[in-house]
Structure formats: structure tokens, C-alpha cells
Image (cartoon, rainbow, N blue to C red; front, side, top):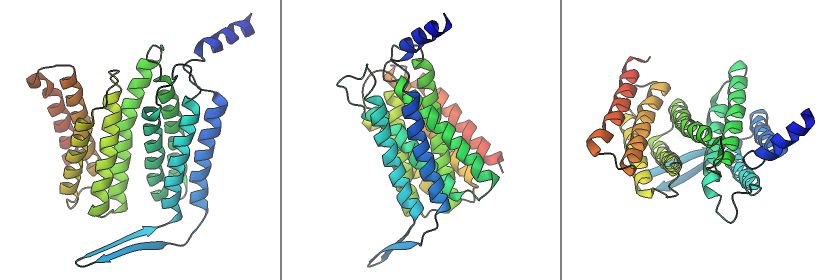
Length: 280
């Protein structure tokens, strides 16, 4: 009786849960790439561009290359997973590939900065947990009628803000120069906002809002670049506006009056920036 009930449960869940074997292989491959990047020592190569009044120098390492390769592996693997979903049909799966790719790319930054020892293994374990969450949640959100859709949507929304906090904190910790900091914040903030806004179920892409949110976050990042802030202060100061602006965009899309719509975002930004002042 028990095996029969288990088989029925698996058949019922098959439409919104990916194959455990495929997810395991994909995550193991990404984590193996993270580990090999840490173990293999490679020479540094500096990419330089010299123009009148302008000098660009960017150190290229194995970690830089592997960050791009692991992100590509994540995108390919997520496409492989989603194509097996019966509800996808002929629809594009690009929206379900964006966040896993960004997650893998962003997680490579703190893993390359953490020192060897317990801190790195803790970060490695957290990265594995976040990858599991994003792959499962994105697969579930393919079908909005599944029982777990609400939980998956909330999980993905929370994960996007965590990713942006990790990225902005890592950029500050690494001492990235402004010509790298601003474009990175703009691109990631815009893509994350685009994914959050697309999760409302309306099947539309809010490109104007996403680009505007990316520009605002990039401008704030540029303004705070030379302030004496710790990495976590810098991250909170940027994540607060991202959260507030996406909330504002969702409220306006739901036809909430502007006067009411700006209250919650203003409170969020105030809390984030007051926390920055007192956090040391």
C-alpha cells in the first residue's frame, strides 16, 4: 500500500518538481567548478587599454573566466531542466534561465574573496543551498496553477534581494573601481528588477521600470563609492532602494493610488538607511 501511495504522489508532483537526478548533476557540476577554481592557482593577466587621458586596467584570472563559464553552465543546465516541464510547451524559457544564471555568477564573487578555512566552507555550503532553492523555485513557477507556486514566487523574490546584497557587498569588499562598480550594479539591479516584476503573473516585461531602477541604483552606488562605508553598509544602502522601487512598480501596476503606493517604499528606504547609519 505504501509503495503504491508513494508512486501516486510522485506522479502527481511530476508536473512541478524537476528530476532529482538532473538537479543533482547540475548543482554538483557547478560546485565542482567553484571548488576547482579555488584549488587551481593560475597566473594573472592584466587587460589594459590606453587612450589619451584614459587608462583602463583589469586583472583577468582563472576565477574571472570560471565565473563566466559556470554562469553559462547554469544557463544551459536550467534550459535542460525546464524543457522537461509538461506545462512549458512551446513557450520561451528565457525568464526561468535569467535568475539561476545571475545566481551562479554572483555567488562566484564572494567565494573568490573568502579566506581559506571555515569561512570558505560556510560560504560554499550556503551557495549550494541557494542554488538548490533557485533551480527548484524557477522550475515550479513555470506552471502558476501548481500548489507550490506561491511559495516559489516568494522564495525567488527574497532570493533576488539577497543576491543583490551579496553582489554589492562583495564589490565593496573587493575595492572595485567606479568604472566597474557602476555598470555591474546597473546591469544586475535591472535584471533582478525585471525578473521580480515579471513574477506578478501578468506575463509582461516591465523594461522601462527595470532600466529606471537599474539607473537609480547605479547612481546611488556611484554617490556612495567614496563614502567611508563598510561593505555591509554599502550593500544595505543599495538593497533598500532596489526593494522599495520594485515594490513601487508593483503597486502602480496594480492601480494603487500614487500617494498610497509611495508610503511603503519610503518606509523601506528609511529603515535601510537608518540601519546603515547605526551599523558598524
